[in-house]
Length: 236
Image 1 (tube, helix red, strand yellow):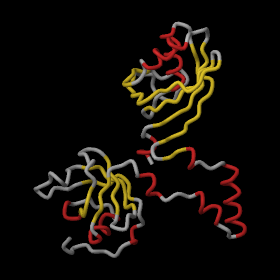
Image 2 (cartoon, rainbow, N blue to C red):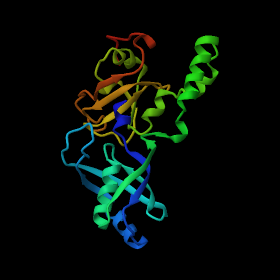
Image 3 (cartoon, rainbow, N blue to C red):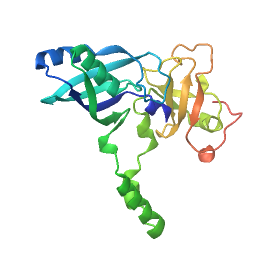
Image 4 (cartoon, rainbow, N blue to C red):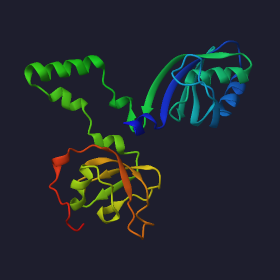
């Protein structure tokens, strides 16, 4: 889902310095990259090479062996690690490049959720050829897990069916909502049983919505249409 793709990422990165630098200077320069930074995508990239602003939420020096520096970086989506290594080397005055990179966190997902392709292939083979889906079930995560980083709205049962057909979310259909709900941001909409209905753009915060305006419009409806009985025309 796009909100996972564009969520905060965490990487473990090996940077190779091109010359000797003492640890104090290295730590000082690395600390300078915390916060908002300017980046121009590298020559070999899939996007236009425009200067962009990205946020480095945290950067930590984990280990160093000679000119090889192991770092952990928590950053906005779209941050180029090889460009970050290059820029650190530039400020150090010795040059540097990225040697290895591993993504450890993407939104709500961590390496603990990862599955090897070979294991997935074997699980699918067992399911298709022997009807044994036990291994596959252990690998498949509930879609609701992907929304744990989003604000949430619970809706009344009487409002669900119309939402499944793409109707906007009216104030009368809202049963409860989290305090971090923001206008013009996205939120996950759930049934009272905590089943994901879909992802909505919030147009009017229900807390401040005294005129009965539409609360949100659907960006993606996840639940199947006939999962709940129709209640169109009934009073919510």
